[in-house]
Image (cartoon, rainbow, N blue to C red; front, side, top):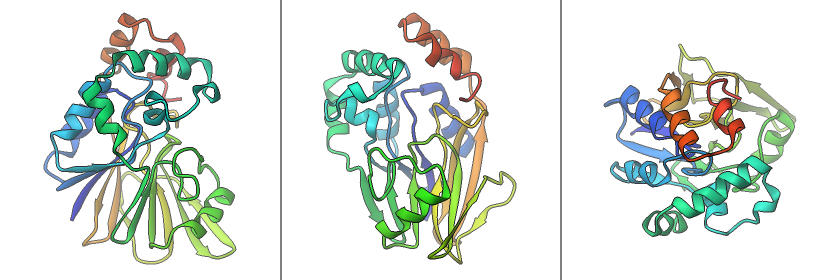
Length: 242
């Protein structure tokens, strides 16, 4: 099975459309790791576009916040402002769809979690120590996570050694040896100083994972955000990838 793996669209329709165009006919199903909405100006359009395709999806912390399942006092000022705007501009249909999504599930050899297998909605796996702890919270060979907006993969070499790896955009990862925790990065708000949308292509038969980046019309998303008077910092960060 060929899988388009995406995460953290964050209501950025231009970025999502660019990913779908770049991936073209290279996939059979989408696995979305959550945070479809929040931050960006097109929550309903992004959810509707995902639902046009064969897919499964998780719910992330921003999805939960818009639904009132999280206390937004824990979010920073700009994120709270974006959540409040999104609550007012998200349709009942969109909210009903998001409300029935799990935050974690298993697909064959792959555990899918928005944030981490230990804390599926909120924990950030950014370092080998946190990754090493999380290897004990899933039973499959591989775990796919989002939430950090940073493409990276962690390899469990043994119970005492977890090694981080940065993406290689020219050669696929062969999924044959150690257990892995893999993050495809963010479609709609990358945070590794690269503003291009980040995603991955997974072939479960060949057992390969390929990282991909694609440019999109950042200025188009920014213009829409300005029209809705969204926080300036959220608008500016898109062009810098932080």
